[in-house]
Length: 106
Image (cartoon, rainbow, N blue to C red; front, side, top):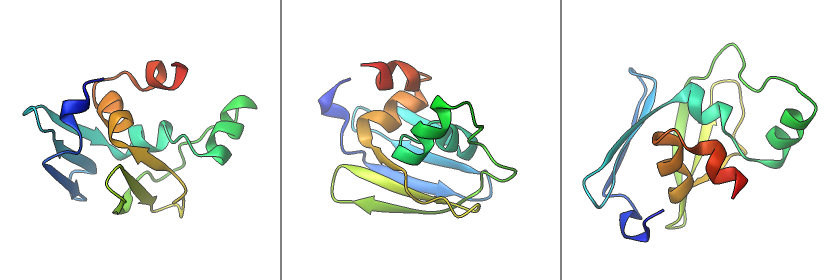
């Protein structure tokens, strides 16, 4: 992952489209669906559920809010009440590129 991309220039939570839109420093753009963010939540609770084979994505993956966590990450709150996931910039970039699992496996 290229450190020059972080932090992004612009982050928009588009509730109508159900996606997080990010413009990175290099001009790259990511449009990440709420379902993808929920699927790849890396909090300890979600990781434990994945290990035992429990589905993470609930009926609704609508995003309620996105909060900046320092200068390095976003915390996403979903309509199902889940708000423990913190998504560092490199991880968000990887999710947007379809490389979330590879990022987690590093």
